[in-house]
Figure 1 (cartoon, rainbow, N blue to C red):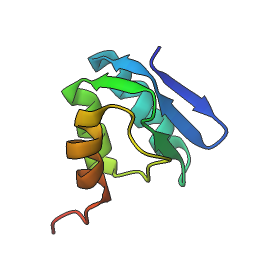
Figure 2 (tube, rainbow, N blue to C red; figure 1 turned 90 degrees about the vertical axis):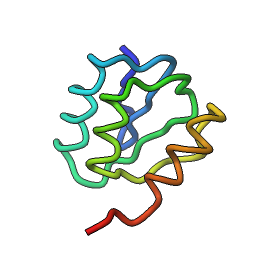
Figure 3 (cartoon, helix red, strand yellow; figure 1 turned 135 degrees about the horizontal axis):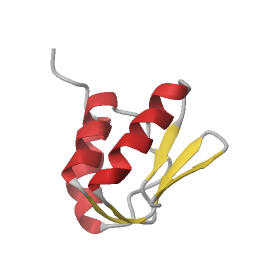
Amino acid sequence: MSVRLEGSVIRLEGECRAEDAEPLLSLLQEEAGRVVDLTSAVRLHTAVIQVLLALRPPLAGPAGDPFLARWLAPLLAATPPG
């Protein structure tokens, strides 16, 4: 599995597929204050991205993948509309 919990940090590693969205959602809803580490993530399925955009968890460290660093990390850091 590409989603792993270490203490209060949820690590997304390698290619995160659609089936990884549900465990990610559960881990984020289970306990407030958990952060997501994208350092080792290579690709994220849009379902995983949707979970991240919906819940906007804080990120631990920079995204390792250049695409994620350029496009997703700024979106997660931005204040949601509304």
